[in-house]
Every structure is written in C-alpha cells, then in structure tokens.
Image 1 (tube, rainbow, N blue to C red):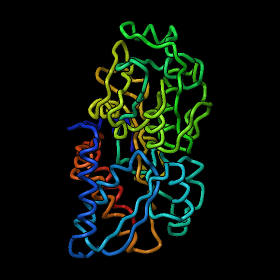
Image 2 (image 1 turned 180 degrees about the vertical axis):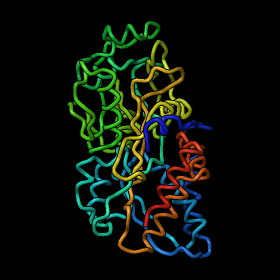
Image 3 (image 1 turned 180 degrees about the horizontal axis):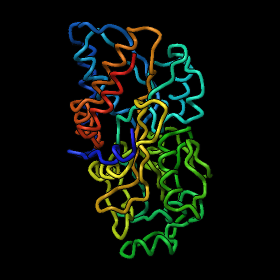
Length: 366
C-alpha cells in the first residue's frame, strides 16, 4: 500500500460536540438499563476484556453499552488504566484487546504476544480521533491564546509566571496575573502524553528537544489519567493541563496558533489534519498507523490531535475469542459506532472510505 494512495483518502468529520454532564448521566442510565433488561442472547456468546486509553473511556462506555444491548449474550469489560498499561497488559496476555493513544512500536512488535496464537503479532486499528486540548484555570482569565513555543515553555518550566512577556504578547487584550504557572501533566505512561510531546517536538524543537514519549520528560505537577489532570486543574489555582477534548467538561480551553490564526478545537478541525497525514509503512498491510502531520498550517486545521487505536491479535488461540473481537471492533469502526461516539464525545468520526479500510483490517482477524 503506497503513501500516495493513502494520502488521497478523504478524512472528514460530520458532527462535533462535547460530552457534558447531562450526556454522561444519560449514558449511565442506558448502562443500567442494559444490565437490567439486556437483549435476548443471540448467536454471539462470551466475555471480552480490554484495557488501556483513558481518552477512549467515554467512547468505550458508549460502544460497550450499544453492543451489549444488541448482543445480550456478550459481556465486555474495559478498564481505562492508561495506554501504556493497556499495551503492556495486552502484550502479556492479560486482556483480549487494548485501547492505546499510541500505536505499538517496532520494539513492541518484536515481543511475543502471550494472548495471541503462537507466532502471531498484533494489529493497530485507528478507531478514535479527537482533539487534545489545553484546559486552564487562571485567576480572572476566560480566554487564552497560545503558540507552540509558549506551550513548550510552560510545560518545560521555562515560563514560570502567567504575565511572562511571551504570553502577554500572544494575549494583548487579556490581563494575565502575576502568578506562578502550575502545569499539570500525566503521571502514568500515556499515549495522550506521546501525542502531546510529539506536537511540541515537531513545532518547537529548540525549546522541546525531547522526542515523543509516553513518559512526560519534565517536572511539574503530575496526575493519573485524563480525569486526574482535569481534577488537578479544576481544584488548583492558576493551572493548565492537557487532556482529550471529551474530558474538558466546562473548563475554558486555549486556542492554538496555526499559521497566522488562533484556532479553536473542533471535531472537524481535528479530522482535517488527517487529510494530509499518510499511513506508516508496516509489515502487515492491515496494521494501520497514521503519521499525523503536526506542523500543518492549512486553513481550519487543529494539529494537536489524538489518533487512538484498538490493538488486537492478528490471530487468537481460539475462534470464539476471534469472533467476538471481530464483531465488537466491526461495530466500533462502523459508521453507526463512529457517529454515536461523535455525538456524545465530540470525536471526529472516520470517513466512510477510511472506516471501510479499518473494517477490512478487522475482518482479517482470525
């Protein structure tokens, strides 16, 4: 599969939104209803266990609820322990599939996958695309413009106070306080951190020389998972942190400088950056890893985007598990599953063409 054929694929979003408290309450009620009045058992029977990305947690709640409603004989448990932990559990055979905000590395692919059939490797399947956002809680400040250098300076500790000249120049109409910056990062190995640090290294390598990594490379305040970062920013003072957009709640979100404009996040803007992003060359044609163009300055693009994956075996030791994984991930990657999550979590649904390619890869699981 050539890069030229990949980059020509349209990758657009149809809807956007934010997963608020009302939607979460509704989803929880749906989950209760599923447990109390599950559908009659169908041909699919069994249990699937997954773990990983906390950015995917809301999406997984939606997907699991809808899939179990349609398949009363199936139970799916997903633990949002973080991408790094999820990948490790999958490699060690502790779960049937993983959610990860970073694809398996070449070193990962060299390891033995204990839960897969002997000799089988794994597939990365991009199923969840969303903006990453910078939420903040700054005294007297309701809007904030940031460029990559400023973000790199804040999270590396070079910018220590909110009224720093670099920040003031980006926000001439905002009275920034003479207060210490508290930058909150993930304490756990995280694909969200890897996407965030990849953006900083690509756009501001002099200030952020560190390459993308699951582990945050600098000091500052640390918190577990997306929910921990949200809590630390919310309860702290003069704080800022990076999270998946679906977890932003009602906190204000910074606009990012892209070219000469400051761009607000949206599902559409997140999807637009994928239009220019090819797939990486991988040994298996069904291992679909997106090389996100972090430096794009195209009109309307929001480059701080997270592409999150479902990771599954190429081959499972038994057909029943393979059948359940195929069925569940087929729903996840389907137009229906993508639009359901987009409505509730503000993610960018896969285009019909890209969804078809993911579905083809899922069908190859055996």
